[in-house]
Length: 120
Image (cartoon, rainbow, N blue to C red; front, side, top):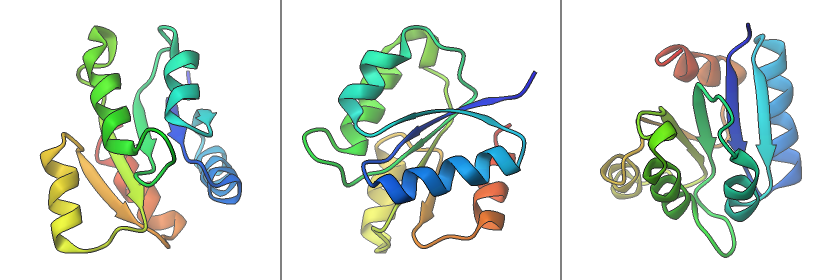
């Protein structure tokens, strides 16, 4: 059974690109345009990994990460932050917030594949 990856990205083009890459790598995906949509749509879905954008309106990726990890079934879910924030201090903040890995935009499919294979 294919591994399922949560994708939360507010930019339609970026979300589509992530999903196309995941499909090409043989993964299934559950994609949402906002943190609110993701929280409403998870409902106990079996997930193997999450790819979260940081800069989103209303609820940023760090806030979403906290809310996902509060749910017992996702407390150990590996999370990769995918973002344009590329300063060392911002990357450190991502790790301090509980992210397992950090990929900066723009990224290649190989970078994404490497990040995913660290966890699944």
